[in-house]
Image (cartoon, rainbow, N blue to C red; front, side):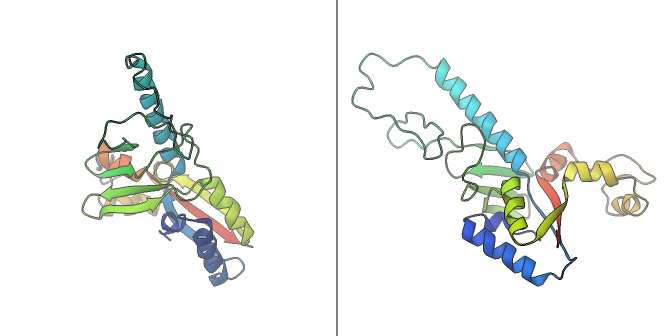
Length: 211
């Protein structure tokens, strides 16, 4: 499945999705899927907010009385919003390369911890595949906890980079990666660029077991 990052717009939608998945599985069935890595999203949000805080700290102090009568504002999630000139749009967390790009629609939590775990929207771009599609952060532990409510136990959870390093020499998957043009023949090196690998490592693979 490649859809949970759309369902996490709200708790209701996430629960309906997992209820439907669990209802379609027999006992012993497996729920296999991939989602964007919430650890990557958290780390990037934290980096962005730390940079913003450093910029604000380094900026010259306003003249006495310049901010008089202007209320302090903060985002609902606790991330501070910098003072903006009229018509200026607040900068939000954004990163990527020529292959992919992530851009948050609003402010992100100052500590990088997405709580509550629903409704954290960002836009995603993937070269020749996805054009600025809205998605939602899927905090892994929240996802796992809700899945357990529907008798789905985690069996597997790894980033794409970890999966590659663990399986690249598998007798079946190794040759398959060569036929797919991912690596050179005879167990050769990776044939993907650093930018492509960065995009791949934005994702994790998972498997839950119906008990």
